[in-house]
Image 1: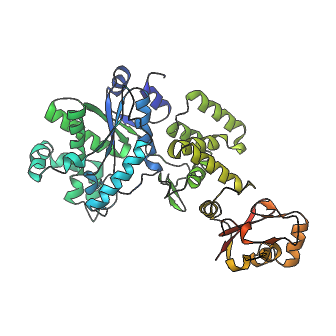
Image 2: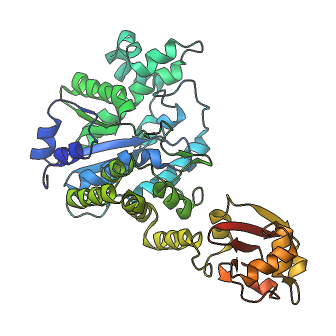
Image 3: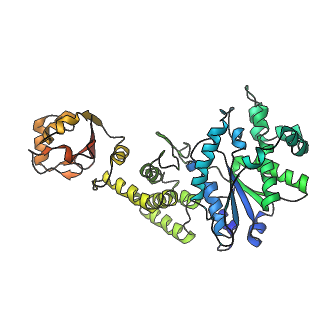
Length: 425
């Protein structure tokens, strides 16, 4: 598999469908190919990682990736996989989103490679200047309404009560023109994406055939699912974003760490660059000692490093140890808020911590960590109370503002895992 990227993709379970000849093409030639990303938001999310990493994976095998930010098609909206018309964005919103997405894509691809550097394009550059007459004459005339309504993304919407607008109906033709434009100007012969993009990809191939008399190719990845039936990339708190400001590296790390046992090895294949031998070794360890969660830990480590970098990974690992009694020093208030978001909490006035401060016994009783001051004293004397993960040795200990986390939080712990967060108000 060292030189055969198609075999590599098949082993990883990443080939959902491909046009005839793709395997031979990728094995015998070095080609330019592209994947498009829809700028409906100012960040991509983990659901976009398979096609993003697909660009990087093929680049490592010598092929030339083109990442397309859909500044033009983003004004329209892709109906694929959508039950109803989406809210249209204005030009300013789309432009902002495209710039954010460009920065995220740039962290995965090598734009300075000496032989096959990646390229980043925005389809607004060619679609934005096209008139409706040009669109109908140069693109629309090559496709019948019958052809378009037979596509699943359109057919499923037509059958619904709300139907589909001409705006979204035209999306496949615009994306098809993207493929033709990249074929004509950059020698791009293949489009990749999720399996829901197959209809759009085939439309682009048809346009290349009908206008240029040439052959384009398509390769699509499976849409990622979770074994428990819930949607991949979603948690109770919402979508897992690639933007660290929207999903912190700690939360990102925890998302992968909490992967279901049934999905862990599969996700190592889908998302990481780890080789076959290493993944198979992790699979053996996981099967022998599933309680150690070796596959999940490696998955969380690799994905956090890939998306957020080495420093963020170390910070996330440090933060993850806090729940198991790790050192809190060095963590800021945002980290504490993140780590202890799901534990019981209360507010106590910051003025109580002025001067000598407030007694730990009072904090335990007022927060409900102990039922009474008497129980609080007994717990301290028994060695079972921790403030900011430091054991309380003296029942008379006072806590001043200097002993809090940045004057904003106090973390109480009873025993090994019973936490309570005090917010200073």
